[in-house]
Image (cartoon, rainbow, N blue to C red; front, top):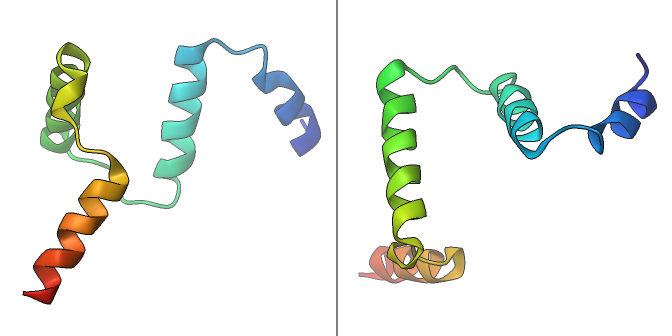
Length: 71
């Protein structure tokens, strides 16, 4: 299957299938997560889904980290 054929097929995938595809593509460049890492991700994701206001926007997080490094 060519790259263009793969791209054309993406719209036919379900949301869950696309998420799996994204995870697998990212895993090609990164060392695999341990079972403990995956469990932690799932726990934190579930916590976020139950309370979306518990997260911090990325720009705010970056600002917090920058201010810490200046101290």
